[in-house]
Image (cartoon, rainbow, N blue to C red; front, side):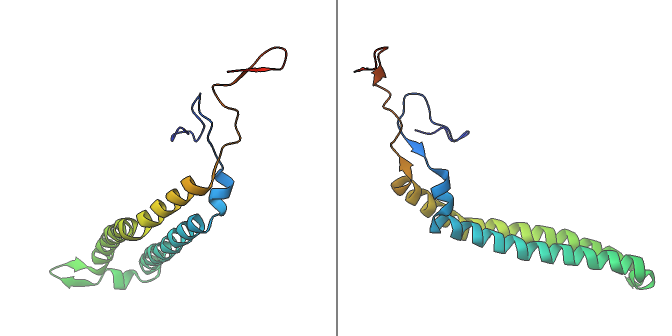
Length: 136
């Protein structure tokens, strides 16, 4: 059986995991595609909001200094919006991870176990003698 931390086989086992075939499988590609789509959208939202804040701070200091309620400036509200946006996206990722990504991971894992484990490594119990014969 393969060591989960290194992906290498433990001594005495005959299974070899074919990672290239796993990466090429439809299940794994779907998982990677959905995660990439989520992270792309989240990145666009975060960098867009951060960029807007920086642009407003640099080019509209009068607007950012406008006081809304009891001396509370727009800049402070925009900065707090960044914090809440970060929390919201973190919550959204955790929710998507539990409801969407984990089932896909499980399906890809099951498919990999069923189809992509090679048994072409020499048997651990079989050894070769110096003359080329094998002994059990």
